[in-house]
Image (tube, rainbow, N blue to C red; front, top):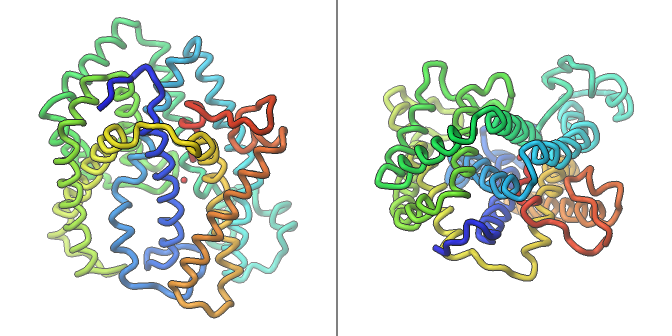
Length: 397
């Protein structure tokens, strides 16, 4: 592992790019599982949940950890914590408002149309989209995939508030205490135990994408955000990951093997026997923490180098995230009467979502007033990507 904590880490760029590309395939594949989604498909594919389960336990913790890492890098570059807060509010808050009012509404509308809603889109926008009540089964206004941006913004504000309140000596002591605990043999067992403890809380695991309901999810995602934040400034922790990432990968794959086994015997909505609850929760905890540590190690060991398209792809990630789910919903409704079977529809949806989201980015980056709305920094030159560390921390689901 290259000891460059004061420099840009290209491996984290590639990891974030890969994580969001993976997210597109995950969301498209979700439409073909029995877990339920508003977009219609050519029917449920019984085995589709098994490959998706290889991602579901760690994809969101990884994104929050990467965001924490990038936030630490940005904070180190800003003049003060206050300046960092202002930049985060602008770079996350403006796209969030734009997304909630312009990009997201077609998703609940198409869901309502599928369930018999008879009004046009104009009526929906004027009377229902922002009415703060439930229309059929849709609670409006809808947040959809932008819940991730809300959570990230909240975690960032809480962290900055703590940094402003705590004396410098306390912050230093907390950083050293965290490093002393994690940078050693306890990294893997302690992390697994922490995730398992959160999953075993008396009120149960919550991942409802609702800010005031997700108590357990906040503990998990918030802790991963803090872990990434600490990792950015800890050479000792990076070296520990370098020594343990192979073991972490093995553990992550072992945890997934048990998760896949459970899905094979109890597929879809078939109830899981009570005796499996705790072992399954533990397996998901092993899978989650193991894969996050393994991917950080792989990114640091093999991907920490620049390439021609890296800067453009890093800049494009946030706009693509903002657009991808709406593009997917619209493409899915267009495809539903084309008579395709599941696999061709899956391929067409993947290509459509990638192409449509990329077009959203290409158009938005060339129109000056649109750049802040889709999460891009204003720039003088329309052709020079402004996407270094600030684009890395801009995120959304």
